[in-house]
Length: 181
Image 1 (cartoon, helix red, strand yellow):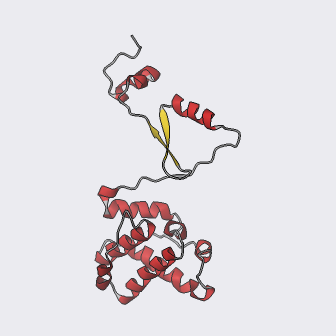
Image 2 (cartoon, helix red, strand yellow; image 1 turned 90 degrees about the vertical axis):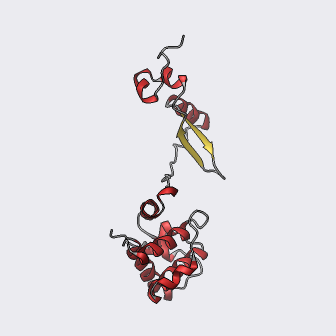
């Protein structure tokens, strides 16, 4: 796995002087390289990267720093410094979201991360038109927090699905006839 650091994103982190950017970039690269290795130190570094990404979902045990070399401990602490300064870790790594999802799946299979994608609609498409389109493909949109929305299929075991998509009747596992009675 050859992941690279996005130096332009690293340069945008507020409160970081230009003189320490090369050292931070090297330490972040060290963390990414170590996290890709499946040994004890790699798992600790990977857990630290995930915690810097989402500490509520992936808490980091600071006692684990004792198990790392001085260089590795300094590197992961620099990642936490970047997080404290407002950096989004997944943006500092090229294809960082995919990298963190892979780490999460490897270390915490019970906490599967579902990738999210940002979609921008054409400015002329209204909210109502979007809802009509979602209804046509049997999906729904729910608001999570702020202005974020999740689009997901409706429950698959409904008669409405069988009536709308009779050719996919077996996929829905329905036992009802394809036409309403």
